[in-house]
Image (cartoon, rainbow, N blue to C red):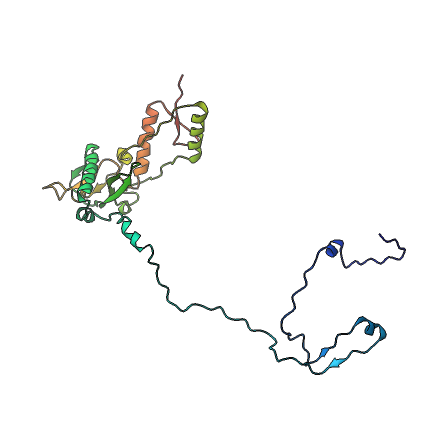
Length: 287
C-alpha cells in the first residue's frame, strides 16, 4: 500500500479489468493492407530516442517477398465419387417378415392360407352368433357400403403367432345426416388410471383387467345401414342380397359411440355411478 496526497484516478479501467487477463490477438502471418502504406513502414524507436526528440526515420524499401494482402480462403472440397450402398447387412433382409397382407386374394395365395382361412371363419362365426346383420334386398335410393378384410399377426408372450382376421366396413363412404348423426365417444383419462392404481396400492386391493372381444359389435345401430356381403362368404343362391346391419361394425363412424352407450347403460343398470370428472370412470357405493 502506498500513501500519497497527489492521487490521479484512472476512471477508464476498472479493478476487475486489471485482474482479468486479456489474450492478445494473434498477429497475422502476412502483412495486411492496413499494415503496409505505399510500401513504407516506420522503423521501431526505443524509449530513449523518444525522450531525446530523435526524429522518426522512414524506410522507403522493405526487403521482403511479395505477399498478397488477403489470403484467399480455400473452398470446401466435395467428393465426386458415387456412394455405394453398404452390403454388410443385406443378408439380414431375408430374416424380416414379409409384411402384412393387403387383400383377401393375398391371404388365399400365400403359404399360410389355411391359417388365414381359420381366422376368417372364426370372425364370421362371431359375427353370425352376435346377429350383426340380416340379409335383405337393397331398397331404392340406398347404397350398400363396401367392406374389406384386415389381417394381423400378433405374437404371444411365449413367441407363438396368432393369426387374426377382422371384417371392417369402409366408413369413409358414409354420408353425414343419412348414415350417422353423432360420432363423439369419451375416452378415459390417464389421470383417472393413475388415480385408480394409487388407490389400489394404498388400500392393498386386488386389481383385474379384462378385454372385451369384438367390443364394437355390442353396440346397437340407430340408422338403417346396408353393406355388401363379405368377400368369400357370400351365401349360395343369395348373392344379390345385401347385409342390413343391426349391430355396429368396425369401421363405422358411429361405432365407438354406440359401444359406449351400450356399456354406459350396462354399468348404470348394475347400480354404478358415473364420475362427473371422467365419464369413463364408474364407482359403486357398498354399504
